[in-house]
Image 1 (cartoon, rainbow, N blue to C red):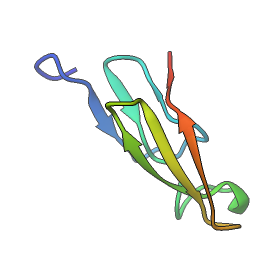
Image 2 (image 1 turned 135 degrees about the vertical axis):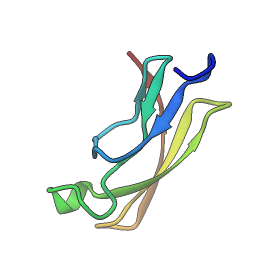
Image 3 (image 1 turned 120 degrees about the vertical axis):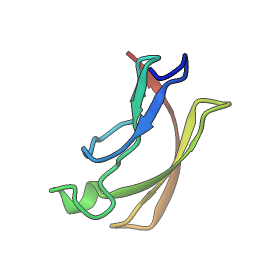
Length: 69
């Protein structure tokens, strides 16, 4: 946490976006995730703690709640 604010980052692809209050990894592996069907691009809404996810394999758009650890 920097100055009382959480750090939002990518770099390490994950299947789901989770936050623990100090940091949130938002990398859904749009170009690097090893399972092609799981490659996704996400748009995060921090106010509602939701994520709009576009799955590249089938161009499906879904809305997910962001989990908290």
